[in-house]
Amino acid sequence: MIRNSKQVTQSIFQIFFSKIFLIQQLKSLVNHHQISSLSFCLIDEDLENYFGLLNSSLEKCTDLTSLSFQLEENDLESDQSLVTLSKKISKLQKLSQLKLKLKNTSLEGSDSLKALSKELLKLSSLSSFSINLSENDVDSDALESLFKTIAKFSKLTKLSLKLNGVSVDSSNAQLLGKTIGMLPSLQILKLNLNSTFDDNEGLPKLLTGLTNCQSITSFYLDLGENQLASEEIQKLGQDLNKLSNLDKLKLSINQCSLDSNDIQQLGSSIAKCKKLTSLDLNLDENKLNPEGARAFGQEIFNCHNLVNLKLSLSKCDIGNEGATQVIETISNLKNMVTLDLNFDESQISDEGIKGIGISIAYCINLRNLSLQLKKNNINAAAAENLGKNLSKCKNLTSIHLGLKQNKLSSDGVQLLTKELSNSLILENLSLNLVQNDIQFEGMKNIIQNLQNCKNLSHLNLNLKNNNIGEQGIEYLAQELSKFQLLKSLSFNYKQNGNLQENSISKLGSSIKNCSSLQYLDINLEKNNLKCKSKKAAYRDYFKSKSLFNINISYS
Image (cartoon, rainbow, N blue to C red):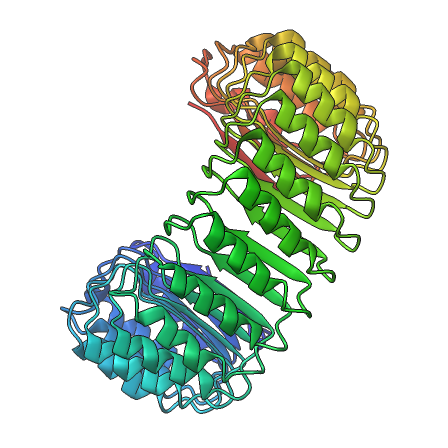
């Protein structure tokens, strides 16, 4: 709740309204008219009953510079709520940052969005504007009105526009590109256009106008689930090259029916963006053969200034050879500090894991590694090999391994963590070991091995749906206090057998004695917990003097 305090002048309030406290919260806003930043979350609410009070309270906050409304899953068209709200927002003349989340809000017509666009024209000081219209059947006239309004925001440095699932014809795509090209100060641009374009003309027309905005340094473009022709990919690459100051690029082209030639062509174009230091590419569920994978990797290698690389190739059927070819080439990027790779469901087995591990070991400056390998054919020997190669990266401080639904077994996790324990400066470790047929001995060895990571401060251990049983909880309780520097623990033990009240209480007592632990997230759901009082079983979890954030899930 908002407190009645005259000292509050520059506070930032984020209000998640419930119907019980809503009226009280809104009335208290009047006492805080000098606040500068305000965020509302009103998801799936009956807005008509209290929007009047919201509007009257909002107009008192004349010093607002930042405002956010999260209004998903409300009917904003039928009750004219958006029209009324937009008139109040337009009176906040000091506003420089505005975020409107209007996903799935029944904006089938054009009246509400047109009214919003008209009122937003009055906000001459906006430097940051974000609007989410995803999953609305917005008509063409309403989009045209919005785009023309955005073009008037001459001071805009950051624009985020989410139109996932909204039909955008070629005419409006061209207008959007022209609009962006008219924003002389724009530096950060985010466009979410998933399943958006009606035809193959929309994307090229959008890109033609966009290239006029040479001030852009960060570009985030989501084109997922659009059926893109080879000509469109070629046009995309050519126009990306024209953004001469581009430093960060995030591009999602998942499920777009691309083949190896398309992906290689895209890589070749990206390599010409010489100022790129951060690249995030999502190419999930396209087709990339081993030859294409090697060619694509070689193109990315030409991005010599890359510091951060995220590459997602899930369900691309690249197999052992393709995965090895990609990693082998990009591992030569000597400036790379952060590497995030997703090879989920890619038909990778021992041979591929060996090649991946050997190549990563050559990334001598790597500090942060995330490797997602869900649903492949990784066994104990492959896990050991991976751990052995990762331990050769002497500068690694953060490792995230996603090994869900593989064939590691207790032997595999023991061998993997034994090798990882040689990473002496490791601070952050996340292991997703869901459904790997791990028994108690496997978990015991994980805990024992990780105790050798003397600098470990953040541990995320996901052991959901294995066969560990109650012994695992008791052993964790026994050993947890030995992790002396641990500040954050996330532990998922869902679906691991029957648990008793005594073992739950033991873990709570152990946590109470972890003097460095500040954040705790434990999931013990679906373990047939048998106890007289669940509250009593978890009482000790809340007695820790160091914990300030705790989340416990049980059933």
